View 1 (cartoon, rainbow, N blue to C red):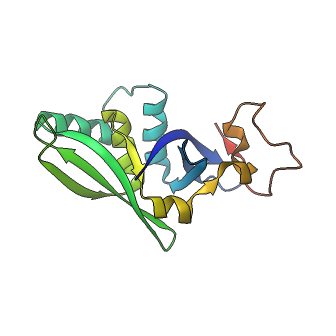
View 2 (cartoon, helix red, strand yellow; view 1 turned 90 degrees about the vertical axis):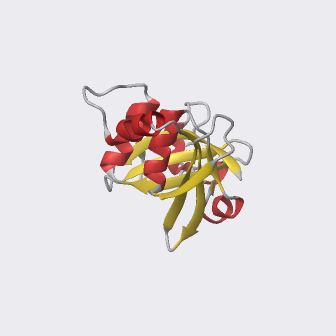
Length: 164
């Protein structure tokens, strides 16, 4: 398993698609997952530390998990098949994490929950290899980096621009 960090959530200007961009810092690879606007918003709000007046679905899930004496231990993106990512949320009920249960989840929901729980996000190595993008090879995500890291316009491939 490879540890991932949330790099950004953005909207592609040309298509309005919502993209969640995860980064494997030790591998120099990005994992880009397209998601719905509600899930993207849930991830973005938590990443920015913003709160809504009423709890969102993922806030409710986290509160319920804690209320039942469990915790989100980790999230795993385990499979990529036919352009679809598959994830698992791993919960533990015992204080030492000995009693674990795995639940099938959409990656966007799993990521939103992991952020709320402060749990790590992992991807299987083969998923990262198959669906990942080498950071230095794909300028479409240049807007995610500071100016000194961004590729020049000539270096950028054609495609969407990620907005913040």
